Every structure is written in structure tokens, then in C-alpha cells.
Length: 264
Ligand SMILES: CC(C)(COP(=O)(O)OP(=O)(O)OC[C@H]1O[C@@H](n2cnc3c(N)ncnc32)[C@H](O)[C@@H]1OP(=O)(O)O)[C@@H](O)C(=O)NCCC(=O)NCCS
Image (cartoon, rainbow, N blue to C red; front, side, top):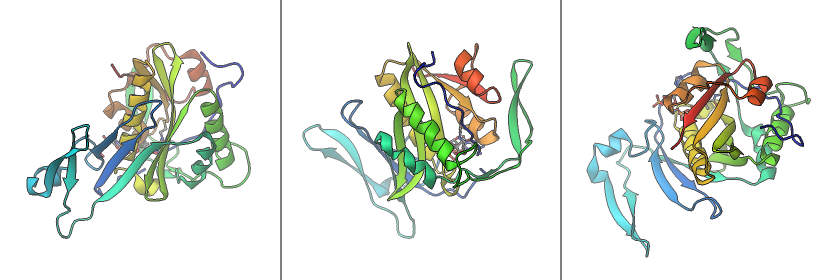
């Protein structure tokens, strides 16, 4: 149910073409109030685990025990000539919504989704080149409007998550783990154009699911930009058309594709 003090804000979003696969290892770390863990997972191939190249070259890996916990950790020796980069996903402070300005949300879109007769169908995109958010002004599609949307979502209970390549902001997500009873809401998910198809959204989604599960949610609601990339990403996570749609979220974004995903 929408919070009367902070009504659902409007937002503008879009997506990107496939970029060459770069191998990223993802470290996810949360603060103690949610869950405390560190996880190494695969970004580039889109599955949590080991990159195909490394998994098929077991001599690259050795397993060691971590301190008193006895937890197993992987030590990676990078084969000569291969480059492996590290992406960190972590919870951010509310005031770090300003990092939205660092995201290039531009995208070339060939295909988008529509709901026709209750079914998801692909159709040619209406807008094929989605520009970056306007750096100035405060109207629709501006950086300021996006920051305001994010600030509002965080004030309503959203948790801000960021993915980073060293100091560079790769992507941001906001998840409200207890939006309603047993229901979380993924309010925001954007990955910068040059970092797409490297597993950043997957890492942010995984973190959002962990936080939502820890908050007692059994499913996540998403109103997705209708682009092939956004809907493709959510379908990959197991999302399905929301039936019924959430009335407030649908009213806020009637042109989106409204999806839910079971996380139990
Ligand atoms: C949608 C978006 C967040 C995906 O981010 P990403 O970091 O590129 O996604 P990932 O690399 O984690 O992709 C994971 C899986 O999602 C699916 N996917 C991602 N991009 C896709 C695309 N363009 N077309 C089809 N499937 C796609 C694939 O199954 C992919 O796995 P693979 O690369 O092994 O095939 C990103 O394209 C984006 O920020 N777009 C602009 C903003 C937007 O639309 N946000 C969603 C708002 S609801």
C-alpha cells in the first residue's frame, strides 16, 4: 500500500545492446543489520558460481578455510594473459542517492514488450534510442528527477545498493524489503551502459533478494521498463506477469510491465 507521507514518485527509465563479455567477480557485503556475508560469484556468465573458463580450469583455483568460521573461500590465480576484474556490491547511505548522476542510462532498443491478451509479446520498439538523463533541470528524464525518485523511495523504507568497479559506480538498486506484508518492491535498478551484460544487475538483484528474504518477503514486485533488456533480465530471474497488478504501482507506471517473482 502506498505511503501517504511519501506518495509513489514517478520515474523515467530505459536500457542497452549486448557488450563484450568481461569477467567480473562479485563481492557482496552487507551490514550486520541485514545479513553479514561475503560472496564470490560469477558476473559474466550470469550464474552464481565460477566463470566457465575458470571452472573448466581447476588448476586456477584453490580452496582455503577462513579463520574461525571455517567457511570455505576461493583463492584465485589468474591465468597469464587473462584479466579478471572485481565488482563490489554494498549497501549505501541514503544520501548516496546522488550517485545516480554517475549512471549512463542511455540505450539502443530494438525490441520491447507489451501485454497483449494477457500475454507478454515482443514488438518493435517505439523509441529506439533512449538518451541519458538530462544533467540539468528538474523535469522528467533529468538526473535531478531520478535522484528525487530515489530519495523518496529510500525515505519510504527502500534500501539503496550500489555496484562498484573500484571507485566507479557501475549500477544502483533500491529494494523495499517490507513494502507490504510478505511483499518486497524493487523500486530502482540501473546499470551504466558501458557495464551492461557483465553481471552487475544480477549481483544487485541477488543482494535485493537476500535483503527481501531477510525482511520476511516471499515475493518481489517490479514494474519494469518495457525494453527487451529490462524485461529479459527479470524473466531470467524467474519473474512472471503480476496477476493482479499492484494498484498503486500500476497507477504510478501504467506503461511498464508489471512483474512478480517468488523468492521463497
Ligand atoms: C536491465 C539492466 C538493469 C540489466 O543490467 P545488466 O547488468 O546488463 O544485466 P546482467 O549482465 O546482470 O544480465 C543478467 C541476465 O539478464 C538477461 N539480460 C540482460 N540484458 C539483457 C538484454 N539486453 N536482452 C535480453 N536479456 C538480457 C540475460 O539473461 C543476462 O544473462 P547473460 O548475459 O548471461 O545472457 C540494464 O540493461 C539497464 O540498466 N538498463 C537500463 C535501465 C533499465 O531498463 N532498468 C530496469 C528498470 S525496471
